[in-house]
Image 1 (cartoon, one colour):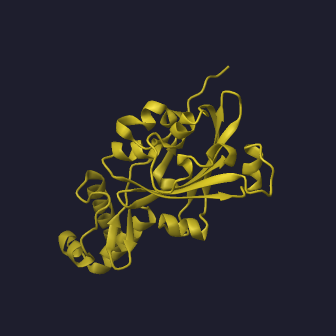
Image 2 (cartoon, rainbow, N blue to C red):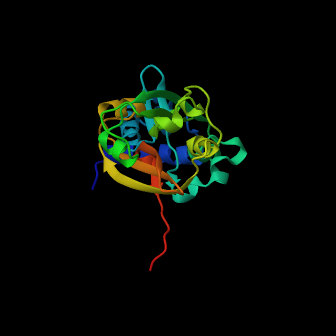
Image 3 (spheres, rainbow, N blue to C red):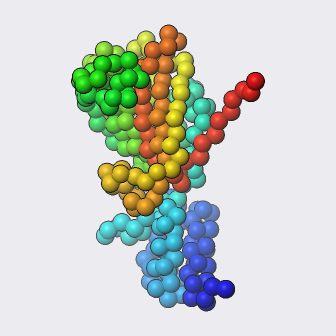
Length: 255
């Protein structure tokens, strides 16, 4: 049997978790200070602090230096082939699948984008049918946030002969429908894709910093390859997201 003290802080964590999910403390807002929470739940500040540690370990809240404890709970985003449907990606002017998914949750999508010409990793070059050891790709890196909460890192690689001098090379503008719509407008509509998912690994230091998670939180890595009707691979996107923010679902025919 747990000790009364341990049972107490877990009860407090359960209550705060329930109130976060119910919307009393909305996603993206800052929780009341620990002394106020201690008064509210009739507990010591030390018990509230231990409850906060439990919730932070679950990814439900995130302490930020000098800014209090932010609510970072999000219902897991469903990762399925349907998210790449053009109507979904462009719904009400959405700027890609992520944009549409976040708006559907009543949150504000934000995109931090940098682009540059680069030598791709050897496996990316091979997938795109390019020689290795050459600067022959455009890489478009995006940190994607939902109401200020970092939830995904994307690095998209495109052959330079396709992307050079196009909207894909611009840092600022975000493209309606995302990069797939942009490629379609350039004459490289994708008709087929494949994905490889690494369901659980520890983040690199850079990934943990960018996603604002502890190094012990696991992440999911998805490598997405988009191909034209002629079979040419024109996009390789590598996405990294905290594991608790993503659920994968696939439907496929069986022989």
